[in-house]
Image 1 (tube, rainbow, N blue to C red):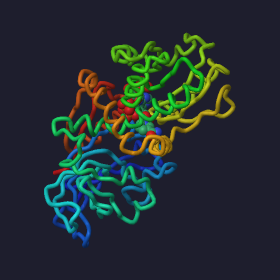
Image 2 (cartoon, protein in one colour):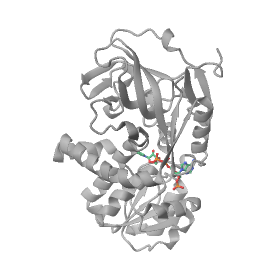
Image 3 (tube, rainbow, N blue to C red):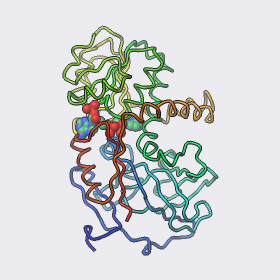
Length: 367
Ligand SMILES: NC(=O)c1ccc[n+]([C@@H]2O[C@H](COP(=O)([O-])OP(=O)(O)OC[C@H]3O[C@@H](n4cnc5c(N)ncnc54)[C@H](OP(=O)(O)O)[C@@H]3O)[C@@H](O)[C@H]2O)c1
């Protein structure tokens, strides 16, 4: 069976060359024999944003390739989405139940539920044991208080990103903005930057500055939560003496260098969050100002779980999420497409920087 005629597929990318991608035929549900304790999920829908390209770009360094094993040299990119139980040999998940979680870009996924509760379960597959639990959790839609069947697109596209936005905003405020009065965010048009800017803006404690591509300046200005929006080639127009924090979603070496050189000692903290400019990553050594520090979301979760308790943290995230859902409806259009051609087109558009910032892509390889 060739990939083009198969109905059950895995999308694979070369780990050492993300521009090389292919589909591989995957076993059909009838060919998958479950062991006791296993569950077969049909991957109904998933979101695809720059964040998923970053999972691939950092696949080895951050262990993202390890979630869904692939043939030697190839990787299966993780995505956030919804899956339906189509066969089960576990009491943790019944036929027809729908779960939200981390999936491969594939038609199906076999999991082995562990630590099951009303809320869901964790995949206990051997190859996932050492990986962070936040990515191994599958949430039962019928008991999830945050689930709304009419807003699945927003959940897949934005919820994982917004949690990071919440934690960045909280981390900066928790540290008194490192003495800064201005926060500059790169890839200001990204969903993660928007969520962060939205939260920073409502604090009214710092000026929120967006850095973006010239073609995205007007879009970012319309979001209404950046006090100032500047194209990447105009960093020099910002007041260099203002104590500033840099929140870097782009990961671009040249942009980072221009920000550090421009602000110099006025740069109080340099927070490396993402790598939307995945083909220009790097830089940070021998730059003026503070050493860029990788933002590690689980560390802030751990701190707030200790400070506030897990329930209070979740409550605060939920409150912020509800506030964000209002303005979000106005700017993001969910674009749904199915099948291998659509998946590859969206992947390549994202890789080459052609994706539009006001679109959120929802994809499916399920037959
Ligand atoms: N550390 C963490 O825990 C964590 C968690 C969530 C997200 N993140 C990171 O945050 C970043 C944003 O993710 P997202 O999903 O929110 O992004 P998104 O909404 O898909 O971002 C789209 C924007 O990213 C830039 N971009 C996308 N592809 C590009 C390309 N090939 N070349 C150059 N620019 C490109 C463009 O913005 P501009 O024109 O404005 O540059 C584009 O408008 C990602 O790198 C992601 O990994 C990190």
